[in-house]
Image (cartoon, rainbow, N blue to C red; front, side, top):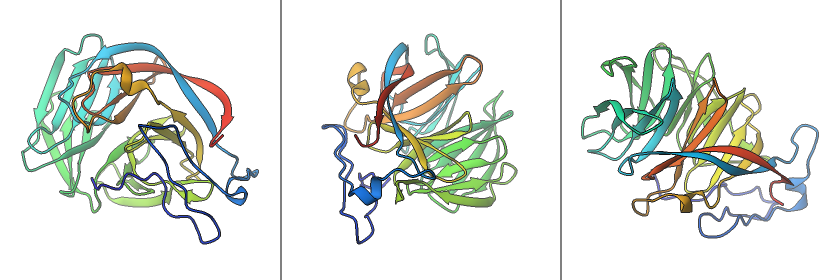
Length: 281
């Protein structure tokens, strides 16, 4: 992934440039009033905080790129060349039930489960691998014309992020391009969209190198709300400077939300807390 750590692209000429300040300081964003005026079609997004419900063990050596929860197990796609792979671990105690390693040339990225298939992206190799969920045997591979970052499934198509503000819909049969949309906040493209999860009709996305998750309307591309997970990284052991927030998983049956990070020793179950504010405020 590139070294662009900014959350927003440049504003149009009549707006001042604002930056997303992350990790070390609170959010600092300065919009002119025209940009942030809420309208009926594009209201100011709600801002959420969080409460920790529970925590579960996670391999601190895993560079988390993709995360799913199914039937009591966490499926984790790990990155870094030589260390990339796919793991199924028991949520309760982290016991590894199945594991497969990618060839050393590949940098693993986001994952998604569709039926009995697990799709795993690669970063720059333009490859998408398909594994049998029951055996972890590789059953197919497809070409991805872009970088691979995050992957989700809306019940019809796979949703692909590539580090830009664009989300592409891809077919599940052969990973063929369907269409795309741009993610915006108050009309401004939101870049660095990373790990994805589709939850109750919304697309949720980590914004790389920040403590924020954006909740996206998949029809309009508008950011509906923002979750501020500041401080969560201080509640876990971390392994190095790359140990940033990344990973969203949803338990459809019990409606539980899990989040984690790269090189984190813990997976957290959290509940969202309404702040009564909109973003930014």
